[in-house]
Image 1 (cartoon, rainbow, N blue to C red):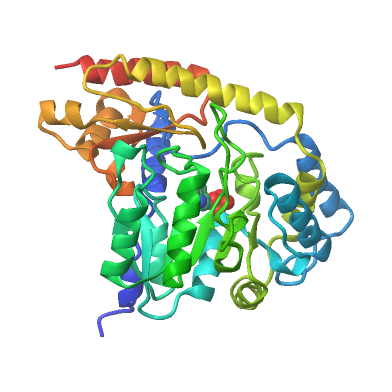
Image 2 (image 1 turned 45 degrees about the vertical axis):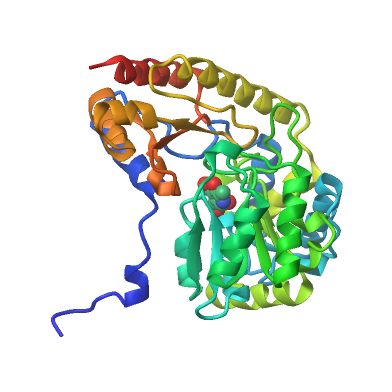
Length: 395
Ligand SMILES: Cc1ncc(COP(=O)(O)O)c(C=O)c1O
């Protein structure tokens, strides 16, 4: 043997495309270039001070020891109350566990429900990590192609056909959706739950953007609908809404045996989620942001409208108004066709020639599209729009 090599499974795990682009933009920035980075999905607002102060207090009071694997009981109970008050989802405290971010919660959930070789349906466009997370759980990801015509919400018939054709065992859903901002109507979610019930499927529902909604959109969790509660594992939390990104916290909720299995897995791989961050998350549960949240939503909405207005004036680009999260999925197919390039090349050119970092849709299984994150200041977005316009109008 010439040296230690990673195994076959780890070779199938790809680096996150969004992190790779953000890293390249950061390198250019460090080299003194005026880069505008709309690659990452991280709000530009700070962590709200009462939440940060709770973390500081935890350190000062010596609340820094190991906790139970599934999180401290008061936080699990607060999580159960939060799910009920915010989404009408009823869980007992032991049906809710604390994880280290939505990403880790998705990992625990998939480790707990996927049997080796199970085919797992992922609805495109999808958040970049799902196929790798399914692969790591020994499942086989099956991607259902995106349906831009239907506003990125699939027809029930298309989902059911894929379930039948591929012998699907479970579905990963994400609404409000990253990257499209799609938010399905209740009837669409019920149709999905009905399919899952008919075919005995589990659902892992990533709802991390569920409080970031616009234009009167309503979030409906599959777990809140008839037939949904008993087959759904919900992942949610405050990373995106409250800028708890670096604190690494989240909730996972679902049927008790699955949550117990997730706690056992977490006890072996992580021990427990960060104790200090749990103290901060408890404050996030108990002290709603109120006006601060309204300000954040107003800022996101202003930026969203700004992008919709300006992008739709650019030749060869269109943007359907997103209804949730903080991403704009720009349809660049006409522009790319005219230039004879694909959206990956477009993003390379945008970064290299115009110092604008955006993520090509191929990272989300939606080639020909480009994702812009509007979790960035208006000043940055104004520059971004100028640069995108210069690219679109250029030769
Ligand atoms: C859809 C989706 N799920 C999960 C995550 C991960 O969130 P967290 O930082 O809570 O791990 C992200 C982050 O970009 C996301 O967009």
